[in-house]
Length: 479
Image (cartoon, rainbow, N blue to C red; front, side):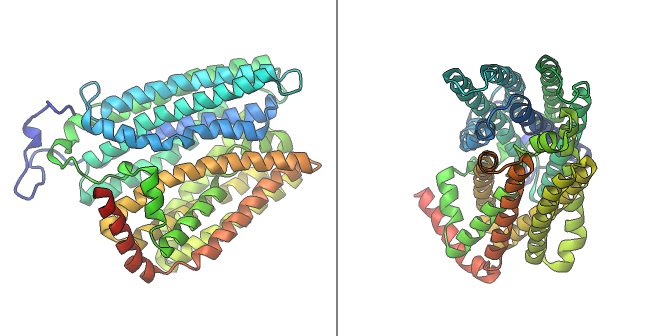
């Protein structure tokens, strides 16, 4: 909503609550979730299609692929700037919606440009060796993915602020829960749509066929995603936003800078231990991002359509894990034990994914990914619930904001690490199965290290010492 748009909607009573702005209903929550669904669909293109095409079909080194793709996560600190911009400078007449729409249009366009650069990179490698031209295209691809990440931040950060603007304390957690779940739904739907559009590509198909079909995919799917972004947000800010009634100094999660995030996350011994646990957990859960689909292609002889659909199995398992944990597992075991159980289950499922390769049976891989998704859902729900318990209400927003930014960087490191370990495996080990197995085995070891750290987390000490330490950091930020 533009600053100049003053209407009866901005009236408030003595308690500061709106007397005329309606509350968002469940239908509107799901409609807002369409934006997150769009991001889930788009994630399939980068970490479900392009990674497979580059590593398997074009024979680009896995580390180069992972490094280029991870650039869209490494630029996450810029989200602070977009959050500030949407606060102070309306775009297209709105504080949030204009940025959401422009950002969505840009990431749709940039994604198509990225795939064109991918073809040029592949063309430069047809001689079988890495050339100066290859280095140039790889650097350009990294730049394009950085621009893609900036476009995502330009859209998603004002969207996160919009969720704060249109909600109150009594319904914000429900809104965030609905919207976040729609991200996983988007991953599943994106995998199914992409798999369907790529079905014409047979195993070992000519590169010209692959290029034609993938180009078509990158025209259709970003168009769908942009449409979902519009459908999910048009009219919402104007009708429901409470932005003009609230203090400009509201402490939103997207206000946290990277430097402040690191100070908050290492404020006391307990915050440092818990942050290190979360970092290791993230590395373990996402190291396979860039290598899973190539694993399906190289070890299981799956087509591009089949490996893209693997994301649907993982997403389904994750949704089940998220649902079951909140209602059944955590209430019985407690949040810390639930998180431990999830971590151990992740390690077991990763070993099963590795063992699936010895059978080269795609069905075995699909079921193992459902298990991995379920274990990931249990781990994520337990860890996030534990985080909320560990942090006092006064500093919860700051801590979660700090972790949100740090997690984006950790996911980028995880993606790069997966590519690096695969490259190392291919240079040292004799078969593709062993090379990919090294990635999954490394993940399993890292998640077990995370469990050992979690046992050192003391809830009582955290609540007393971390609260005081974080508060002192926030005070110094205001000086």
